[in-house]
Amino acid sequence: MLDAHYTPPEIARKMLLELPLDFSPNTVADFACGDGALLLEAANRWPSSQLIANDIDTKLIKRLQRKHGNWITSTADFVSETSLKRSKIYPLQRSVDCILINPPFSEKGKARLTSSFFGSEVTTGSTMAFLLRALQFLAPNGYMVAILPDSCFISDRDKLAWSNIKSHFSVRKVLSNSRSTFKGIAASTTVAVLRYRQHNDFPLAKEKSEVATDIEIVRGKLQMHTVEKWRSENGFPLVHTSNLVKNKIDLKEICIVNYKHVIRGPAVLIPRVGLVTRDKIAILPRHKSVVMSDCVLAVKCETNNHAKVLTDVLFAHWDVFRTAYGGTGAPYTTLERINEVVSYCINANLDSQNHRKAA
Ligand SMILES: C[S@@+](CC[C@H](N)C(=O)[O-])C[C@H]1O[C@@H](n2cnc3c(N)ncnc32)[C@H](O)[C@@H]1O
Image (cartoon, rainbow, N blue to C red; front, top):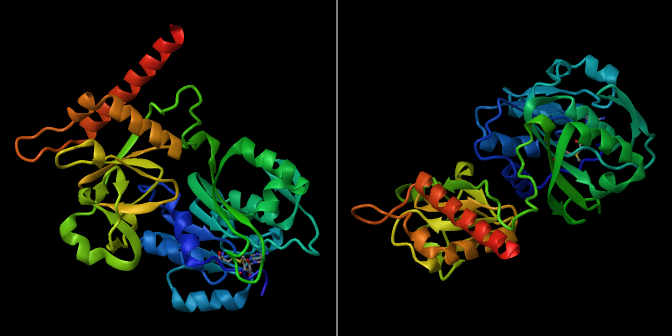
């Protein structure tokens, strides 16, 4: 068994949460799939995707074949061109929508490897060789989520490879895992999301203003009458308007398991339905994941600090903000209306900042 340090399910779940909620890949691959931990999580989230499992260990692959007859399976040595060329995954280059990898990362006693990457030859450690090869399978619109040892990000050995990668792909580090995350190995690791640069839709750092002006507001989807259907001990805490109390998210016992409904901080949560009061505005901190009822909205933010600043901005323009809510019966707002009003508040705040600077 080579580097059989399998990803714990909770890490696999967190990795997938880093992908946009509306991302729905036709194909999902893991080229060092082990016992399939990452692919199983993908199968939960995207039941109709075609899963592709490769591992050099034939016993593992046979076991997966028996369990999941509809997966495409292969036993290529992923860093050997000769072995890959003989495999059925070779023709899939530049076509896989979602690649999940936790490549073998022990470098002890392993020779450096030379890979060809976008026409350049690069010599690297074996983890990086795996990553370079895997990137060649990514579809132009696809996402890769990779767990890599921290050493891979900082070693001189892989410096040139990173510079080559970054000229073609955006690399967003999203999670840090402690040294005890993987059984049998003490290595701190980082999860990164990679995409082709021309499709980079990650928010750019907003340096000019304290608050982003291109806001994204999402509406919760869980209908309260379906709670029992989705209730699970292993799910995510449910946030309904009644849980927004004194500017805090007052979580109760109810947990919901349904990926489609999960929202991840940082964000500012606001009620969509009901009387809006200041104490109903609450921050969902970074890395915290919840399921929102369809009566709750989230304004997504880049950092906890942005969320805090945005909250202050809304309070500063409260009379305007309140106008987003109308209706003949119980007050409610719409995504369109709240978008207009929040944008207005942000712009008004920027104007007054500029005014102060100019004065
Ligand atoms: C760290 S485990 C990851 C398993 C799985 N992706 C997960 O996250 O649980 C690494 C896997 O890489 C496989 N492996 C090692 N060298 C390989 C190679 N050259 N080609 C393909 N798979 C390899 C091992 O058999 C092992 O199952």
